Image 1: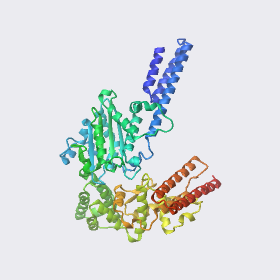
Image 2: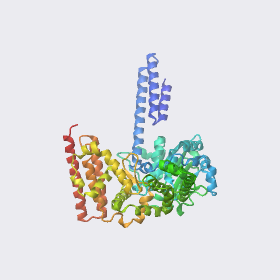
Image 3: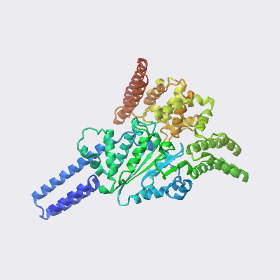
Image 4: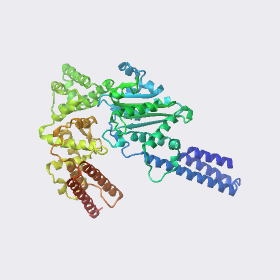
Length: 591
């Protein structure tokens, strides 16, 4: 029986961090122990020793799990998945050729040594997807990261090896960890350890036994661990490990210690390490520094998306009843409609963002203006084909009556997208912003009981009306997400363009910091949840004050004059007072 106990303990140790398997082994062993004890086979002393050993093993396993979680918590950072979640989902049916039609890829890219599917099944090193801004690179990378066929092909390549697929998405408007080397390594190591906990000690060595508080990783810790990870993929280590990392947006990399050339060198060093069993799928704009990153394995996405764009254009326009009526009038109308659709696709030159804006403009002409096919074609002819020129055109074509409000909304959206961690404002805050344009003291005059009024009577109408105003005034450059929760630019290239060109009238005479404080004050007063009397309420209060602190810090860093600090502190005191008054109001309300 002692040999069987030792065997069970070995199984438990092998299971390691797999709590479900551990529980099953423990249950089976105890059942057998109970039966044999009843039969008088097991002696009392022996049973006690073995139970003590088994419970000791249980404590050891629990300690190992805690230790792993401690490392995972240290590697994780709050915005690690923010960029990925913000990227649009691919339209239905798009990008399927990437995994099924290598002939299509090699026909448009004579320089390819092999197709993408072939590289997945047999290739090593780096595959580079580059393209024009707005051509759908990030959307494709997200699509592949979550696609079952992509994983199946990788699984064939890995064979009997354990496979880890991980992704990291650089974001130039995010926090430092969202765009530097440290954040990249932390994100990838977090996924690897989550999937393969037994690699903890091989990656971090003796350091895994020393921990108090939260683990703080230095760049040297991370680089050493990552180098070990690459070496562990070698066959001689016996780890049976295959890795595939998806890294999006190399051109959004920003690190005070390193540049694009350094990043490219890191990527090549990882994949060219002796015996490394590692693939990298990367994407970027077509910059000279990245053109030799993957010779023979570089794909220009904008040359491939014509079919996807055609599907999108036809789906968005032919779904309109009015467009179908025009098409069905006679054979000439049908030909003109088909020519319009084809013309849009040809002018797009593979840039999805251009298509999105143009199609939305034409849809507005069909639905709201009752445009004829000739007018739609004329409208298309007047739209610039270069993306930067189209952005400028969209701004200039905003109706003069709405232009000032629209420019201020853009200024706020740009500030939200390019500061802090790039968090978009909630839709309700834009309602308060639009109200503030008409009445600067709107927030101060809003009653504290407004939480009941807004939540129970007006909230949905406020949301609907704010959506309509943003869509109508901002020429489709901003969008409200499907959950009606936040407002964001339709593509990252728009805030990038605004930062580069920054038309002077975007924020002339407009105090964005004041708008932040005033709308936040209104948001606090109208909040539908209590700010005290519950853990949720306190969490909301802490989040509000964290937001305020971030803005105060930024304000003081930009201007440390006594007047600016006094200005900021007065607003902080007003907000803090509002929170506590709201607390009193909530406590007096009937539950």
